Length: 114
Image 1 (tube, rainbow, N blue to C red):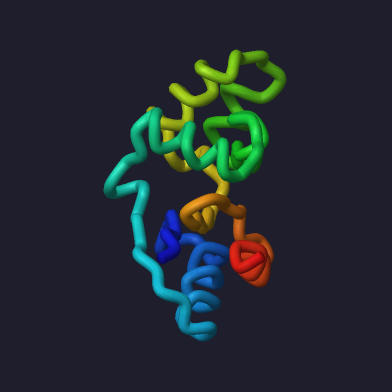
Image 2 (tube, one colour; image 1 turned 90 degrees about the vertical axis):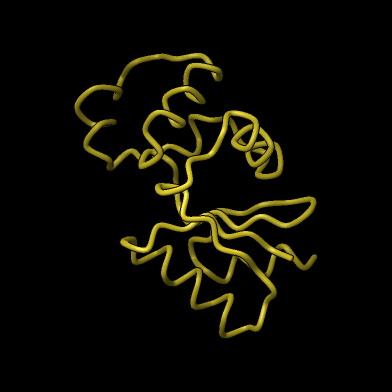
């Protein structure tokens, strides 16, 4: 069973969801803007992505551009910022039991089958 962390207003996120449906994956949807992640959720996902918190930041977000760009934060501080401002998180993220991918392009979801 896969989990997609989804924002229905995001075209890339909708593409990921459509890919899961078209390829008949078993999955659940977590609309993370409505059902926020906990710090532990985010840490688990980051471990499966094998990425640091700063590497999952959407640098095109207004909050990042206006307030965070050029500033330095610890991993824990980035995690706190993402939890407090979930729009900062890249999307969609698709998670399996042992691994996760940022599904851009959506075909990256196939990496979870390897």
